[in-house]
Length: 285
Image (cartoon, rainbow, N blue to C red; front, side, top):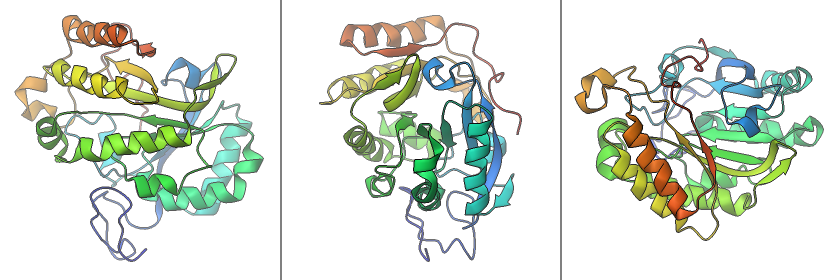
């Protein structure tokens, strides 16, 4: 497209000429593909999730754990045909699912690839994103994605402006979540493995549990409730050192306040045990 408007940044860049707000040009930049064992148990299973990590990101969080690739400067350019072959390679390696990680800026190409091979894959397809999505872009994926895995980061525009330069984050993220739930309203399982539905991830930030509670209130008020995964794995990295209030790990008190509130709201899903506050589950890029 001559003017890219796939993500809420709507930079209007001709990515065949120069990189967009995502940091990437028009060609698919692949950072890594692998069997990934760091997702929720119903996504990872026993054989791993077939993760496809794309370079670049439109959100640019100061605490990004995937910062070696999120700036779009590390990876290998591949063709849509090669991406298709990778999906089948991951399936043949035993992956429970195909897991597209941070693919918003390639959503048109992902849709094109899936339209040609989705029926032959035989395993669920996961769209793993930052939550900073446009409804119009998600509609391109309607009927092609089985599981949406958005990482809803903020309710507060002040926090999203400070840490992700996106004061409009929640204005996009919640309509996007509603579109995901329209496409996949019901959580479905084959045994312990998820085959369809929506899991909302939320990483609790230091000094951020009040915003986390507000976010959970908004999720609980939705007419269709997703599963919720409350994450405690925050550890300062990338540019977090420049922000003293988040330049530390999360306390048990902060995390437990959010988990307790989720229980009070009747939200269902997943929690993390203490000790995960490190980069051990972040792939080596």
